[in-house]
Amino acid sequence: MSLSKWLSQKRNLLSNNHVKQLDFNLSQNLWIKCNQCGLLMYYKLLESNYKVCPKCNYHFPTSSHDRIHDLFDSDSWCPIHTNLSSTDPLGFSDRKLYSARLFDMKLKTGLSDAVQTGMASISNIKVACGIMDFRFMGGSMGSVVGEKLTRLIEKATNDKVPLIIICASGGARMQEGMLSLMQMAKVSSALYRHSEKFLPYFTILTSPTTGGVTASFAMLGDIIIAEPGAVIAFAGRRVIEQTIKEDLPDNFQTSEYLFKHGFIDLIVCRTKLREKLYKLLSLYSNSNSLH
Image (cartoon, rainbow, N blue to C red; front, side):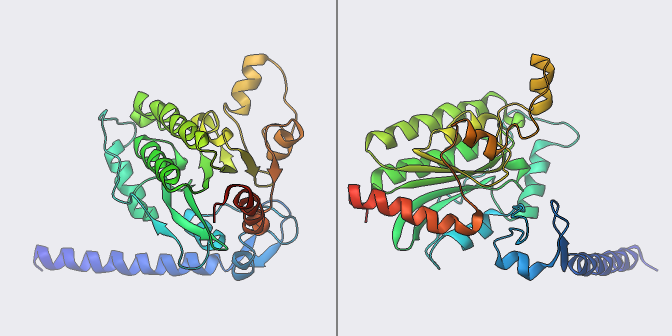
């Protein structure tokens, strides 16, 4: 047998095994167990309820694509700056080259980076929206995330439309070093110019929202909304406990704890988010003629 024929057979065998594995995973996911209450539910029931447990209201992780589908008017989403993609300015390597990690993430998620930005409408009210996706390197904020959000904010300011950013992030992207930290100031500066035009800015904090994202644009919204039970923090719980040498409350760094202490304005279930955003946008529209 020739070498080329042997390699061809190996490739076919691997391909068949891969298809079987995909089918097995699909059958495994037909029924999904709630992480909080243990309810076993058919996956279509969960998807029809915006990936929220109908029994205990536990919010399952969801993708930026699902959020676009759930929040905005049908076919109104118009993505912008889709051509921006991260490079490897520091030549960073841990267990894998950063450039290779980026390539793998793009194949796995179909995204160019950890945020999608675009223009859309909610019940015919035009908005600019950035949606972070935790699947892409933990939603970490690198140069491209900061640049896409900055350009989105500038477009919202120029077009005089409300701005919404949905946050889901582990913080700044360590593989880009200081370049990632600079994005905090850059995005915040663009938001300041947006506020000078008296245009509304809403942030929606999902689980988790942490690190440099929390320390910058996530907490700068005119109205800060959070999903129930979301983890919202700057440093990790263990780091804080070891620093101050005290035990923290069980619900520390949850949206409910932050709401009680005045850090956020609203806690809104994902199933009610579109309706709530429309009401808030309508109030601003009536006072500032945003229609």
